[in-house]
Amino acid sequence: MLQCPQCGSETFYIEREDRVVYFSVNEAGEAVDVMPPEEAVVLSPDTIIYCTVCTWNGVAGELKQDV
Ligand SMILES: [Zn+2]
Image (cartoon, rainbow, N blue to C red):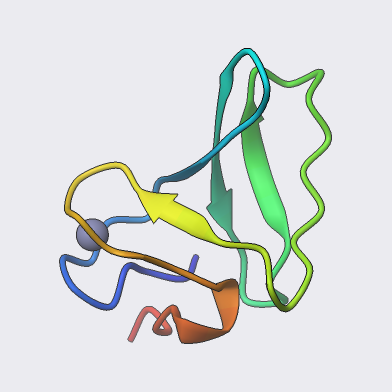
């Protein structure tokens, strides 16, 4: 899984109209382990995502590899 560049968390979220959707991002830059699972999350290069732990937000391309 890719990690937050600030704190190393592997859980992120996006805000939709009426709910918050949580997920992790795999090495291919795809959202996985989406919660709630019926929400489809497609990350485009300019989709802003938010870290659940710290104040970081940005695009999936800024996440760091788990080493
Ligand atoms: Zn973070």
